Amino acid sequence: MRNSLVLGAVIALIASGALAQTQNQNPPAASGPQNPAISGSTSKQVEAPVKGRNSFTEGEAKSRIEKNGFSNVSGLAKDDNGVWRGKAMKNGQQVNVSLDYQGNVVTR
Image (cartoon, one colour):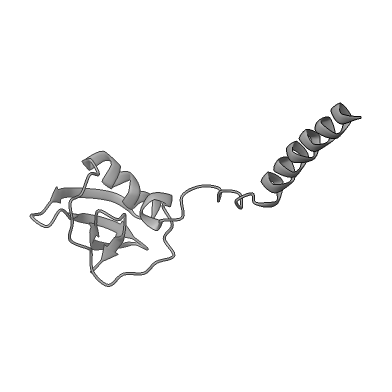
């Protein structure tokens, strides 16, 4: 009988530990990054490019600008503020275009 009580107590402790773990689970991770700079989201509108250390290569900058509906992207050069600047076509008009380190595309 003594062994039965000990065995029952051990099983109860194990079961309560397993139950506690299933009740305290963290919510599942979101699918994909939530930061617009990483996710490529264009829902955030900015008035001017953000100054900062830009890690985009010229090819990546051109691709990002084209993904935002621009064509004929040319003359890209990174300025002293880390902003890629150049010219592009959108809706049949040539515009000055900028890409900051956060991935924001801004026209003037």
